[in-house]
Image (tube, rainbow, N blue to C red; front, side):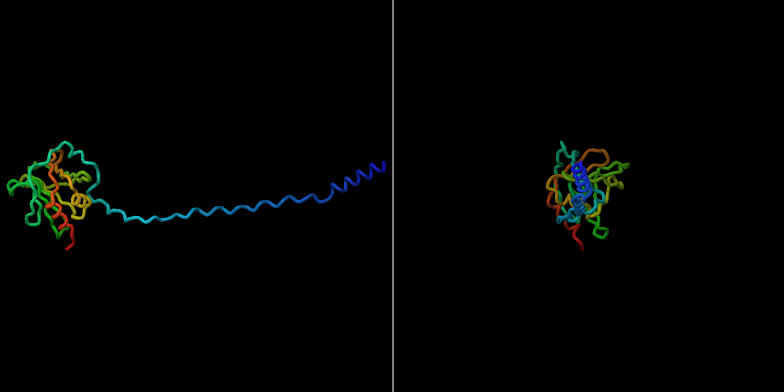
Length: 183
């Protein structure tokens, strides 16, 4: 029995010893730094459109081009015959940095002039005098920039009337480019 007591005492002493220490906790990982944002080179945004917005131009679909040609006269691009037969006139007003757009055959109560190309369109308020509707647009407007680059057609209509479509020819582009140049 002594042996049993000795064995029990040894066992008790052995169990009273220091227990092995658990391994230290793993250090907490530092939160990962957010990924660096890499700025890619970009062009500056285009100037805000003042009166124009780029869009498709269904107004030109199925519309034939008017017969005639553009000519330059006193700083204006004119489509049609002489002053009596003028259909469209775009005149540069350098002091106000604007272009006056005139369309013939306007009803007295006309309110808007709609201009469309294959890539841009604009609707402008008009004043009417002697059956001529006149609207003004800044010479640096996004629509004028699009028109100066146009290689197709320009459509112009008064309110919900019929669209008059004309070819955009070099004479018109030349007048627009000259008007857009400073000084």
